[in-house]
Image (cartoon, rainbow, N blue to C red):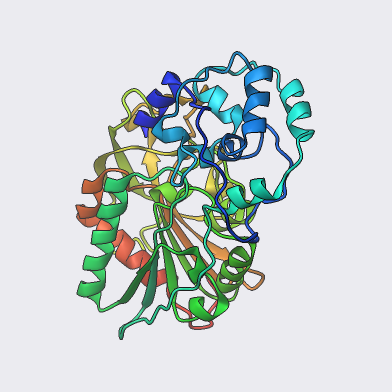
Length: 372
């Protein structure tokens, strides 16, 4: 992800937003939210009036011609940052947002704004028919934020190979419209393949949360917990259990030691006590252990240099890199997340493949037993 940081330094590209596309008003998150410095940057870019306010009130924020990371068409990095995070990432941490927040809040949110904000979501329900096999796995690949193609494609190929080898029923979709009670009940586990950006409408969110709360499984990979800003608290705080802080920048990829924290867990069964890999290593603002996660593997911070990201120290001390969570009022739902997986070759590592295979098997156990 270091390439997007370089482009942000080149400029935020607040010129040239696409006009709002005609369409129905749907229940996308933040559809009716007032403009502010804390809403998605893409929603500022979609409004000529809001862009004018930013240009006038934040002249210290560099504006230039559009670049791929400030596109108003998803996937776009502008969907996962706000004005504040954009400024911090390019070293502008002392800006005064009082005037811009006042003037943005005074702008009316029009139907054209609402339609433009919701254009990156979808509501058509795809016809998904799982093939024979167990577990029944839904591989979800809709991305509205940062899309790292090689990571997504390597993970996709790895899960297809796992399904063929293990006899899973694997179905792939890039449609948020698949998140309905009727569709989700066909599957034992949903894998989020490097998902970035807010991708579900309010009804779709509710369906997914109910699915997990009542025993559905979730497996999240790398970028599925790597956005600088989240706009769905349940997803990041309850389902994942930790918020992304950053990853090393110079150098971005480093060789570090992964250590199994609980060798007795089914996901860790048969894995070596430790191994090394060259990767983009995520740090989190707090340890997921503190929010009740069961840690499968940690990162030995003495084996690499975490450094800083956007001015934030990335040293965690206790540094979980893969963990599980029990979700819902009866702890029926199962969640697994692994931060490993930016480099495509990691999906060929035997340790990573085995851990993911065993994670899918663990998360898919919709047998009425409480998650431990």
